[in-house]
Length: 203
Length: 312
Image (tube, rainbow over all chains, first blue to last red):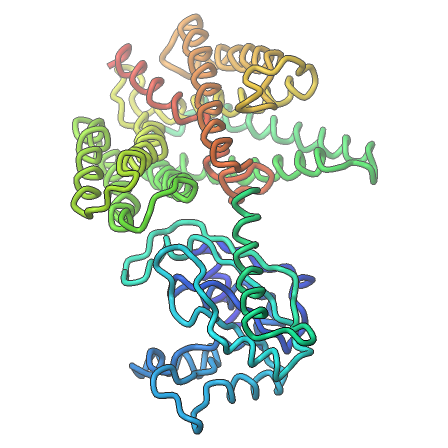
């Protein structure tokens, strides 16, 4: 219940509306989006219909989310985040392993393939993680998401929010095509996110 | 504020109008059956939203002054939110916007509540004008500086300054009308909103000749005159609750209606330029807050100053 309430509150503050259940493939699934604000993952989390949200797990950097006890509790207990190593990656803490395991367990992941928040309004090159997930679980639908205005509500490097209205656009699920190279797949996935932003601006 | 019989007559009359609207909508939908379509669905949603808006507005009036001040402070806040969302400000404006939402807007309404007319009337046109420009320049980003600055200043003028003149009507000291200003507020909002509704109705029934097809294709000459004249008649018919004589109120009503039309047209031009149909989705069937109050933006300050000039 408190999760539904938190999600409703986040939607009210950001102005983002719930995604119709018909547009959300049932988990396991991967939601991937552009990244420009701290609000990005909680906004996607809050926009998912409750059944999907119950299985949704944001993928986040261990360095940030384990820095204070409060963040650690929020990440592990409230959001059930999949925390991954960003700085000292070794074979033993391979960031892909927990994500692949979460998909195998039937969860939905929320990922930001750019790896860090963009400050110039552009969608940057995708890191290869999304490709490896798609290769490990070829049947899992990959859902592109475009987030708008969240960086105007809370830009990178600021702590004071401004109450503007953000939007979230969901595209058609995609899969890794047979024989598709890593570079081609990542470019196609990035283009899917960018295209959602363009159709919005033209509308 | 005095709880005199007249204000109950007014609110009762509005309730009667809403009952009629609900009944007409019900009959139209029943007659149309399954093929009712989007127009009737939208009409029903609009009428439902009107009930909520009238209820909230009446409750705010019933508290005396403070409820109306708080209500319109929220109206301004939500309108500003929609307006700035459409305005292409950039990251350098972030802190300026924080001030606009959380300092300037509450301060303007605080000045209404404490009835400090001298500062209320210049806070935004003088001090916020200077502050927004200076704060922006200190941020050091010159790209589109004039556009960005002007957009924030305009947003504050239209969404906050102009709208704050609605509850400010309660602060006017009109000899022989003490404690009755709530009725002025009610009449202003009623005439402006009924003019919108009647222009919509006349436009749907008889509309042929567009007034400004490149800006608002739904506004027609026939709709405008039908709505403007009938709303003026309505306002004139309510002269007995105002401090005006009937012919003064007729002129006043026509002016309010005209300014309401201009306000709606100007806010439509902004929407059209940004490529959107509505400012938001806050009010079911109506669009955003800004879509509902666009016609109050210009009418409220002019009405306020005319009443002030003539009667105080």
